[in-house]
Length: 164
Picture: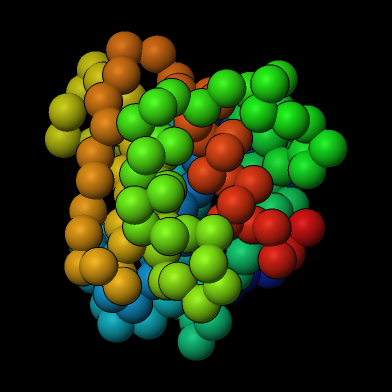
């Protein structure tokens, strides 16, 4: 994995989107089970080129994620005006969020959408939605044959609510 600056990540994301590459990104906290270093990391995977890039920082790059998420999952992924009636999350996701108390301010959690071709997905060809709750020291994995768009939308809007 090549280490680059966050500004270079922004430029790279734009370039690979314009080139119609398949790509995605991850925000890794210092305690994240996917993180190799005890710092915040922003990982961009260019699946088409078979390259991965990382930028380390002292703070999570949530604003960059808010900027890039719609390029991958569509413009409504972080739309706060869209209701759960439009995107109905699974009962499993609703129960998971309720159990962990993610809607309570100060609860530390994050999630990962592991696409079948993701470097962190050890269950391909399944899609894996990984939920990490550091308050409860709990990791929950949900597997599906198709991208769990409604579950992802619910997690994304909750996670990025303070940034959008």
